[in-house]
Amino acid sequence: MSGAGFLARPEPTPRAKDHFDEDIVQFGHIMNASRLWAYQPAAFDGIVELLRQTSVEHGITTRQRGILVTACASALGDSYCAISWGTKLARTADAQTASAVLRGDDTGLTAPEHALAAWARKVVRGPSHTTPADIQDLRDNGFTDAQIFAITVFVSIRIAYSTVNDALGAQPDAFFHTLAPAPVRDAVTFGRPWRRPPHHPRPFWGEAAGPVARFDCRRVPPWLR
Image: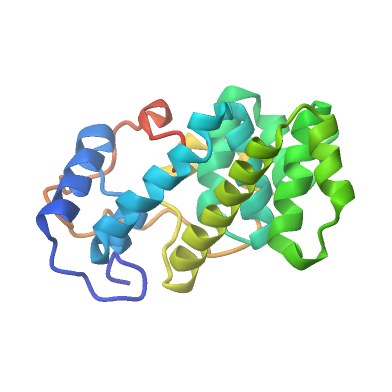
């Protein structure tokens, strides 16, 4: 594939080049999602801002976002966001907790976290089948109606983002083979395949031709990666 999923490589605009440069500075590598979203970098920026508004501005913690995204991505069957956010959740919680949420097992979560994971899966699997009782469960676990609305928008945006990536063939980045803990890797048995490439692909934009030496997940925007 081209590095932009099933699509041909787009001609990078200045805005797309800024995204590439940010990836190279942070990771020494352009993420596959950035390559694909080079077709619409302004839309990508808009998604980032909406995710920030509907999570960070409403007091949703990094750990809670990790639970929402891993529950959402695994229910949707999106390997890219599942492995990416499963890795992040393993850092804010632990690898076994992240692995369990990816497999649909919430026994290690607190009651509010369990409510978040359950709600994310319901939004993915059957949004027209939710009930007032589902909302009351979130309220009973300390979430305000404003937060519930924001959380639902957050999950819905994640679904849209994942749908674009999956439909157009974006695969998880190879560096997750070394970055993701084994329990997280083992739990992601769905979605687009991801495997270590036999050699580093031809440079896409300014990146070095060689393996990625180091990747620090803590530097990734917490509301997106």
